[in-house]
Figure 1 (spheres, helix red, strand yellow):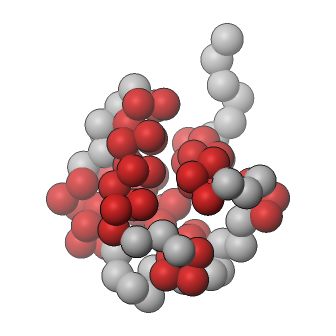
Figure 2: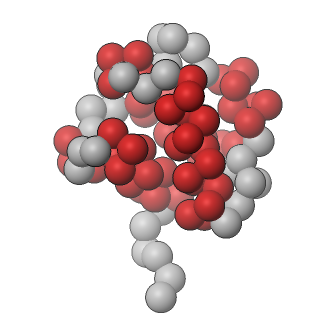
Length: 84
């Protein structure tokens, strides 16, 4: 069965699972720092996304797009932009 979710929706699901919340509870304008996502959590999300999507993520490009001021929406956008 193929997924009808968009790439960004799939990434939101992965992030929500990591945070142990539903996708409807994700607040996209909140800073990553406020969600409790640190660099280790981001790395775990990247690995989970690569496994689920069966596609590599360019982590070098991703790391240049993330700062402590990055919002959850920007994180999803950056992840989507770096999926090969």
